Image (cartoon, rainbow, N blue to C red; front, side):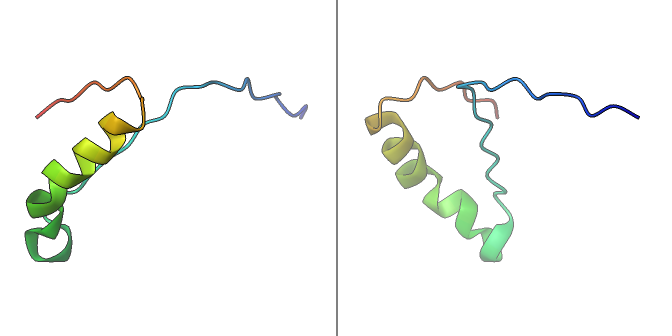
Length: 47
């Protein structure tokens, strides 16, 4: 079977589990979002 070449992309998917670390993901989400936003990334957020 031939190997498929993977196309590089500038898109990332970040998943934050709000239940991780005794809900620490939820508590830290504001800080995480601010850091991602300040980095200049285009963000789409879905609740």
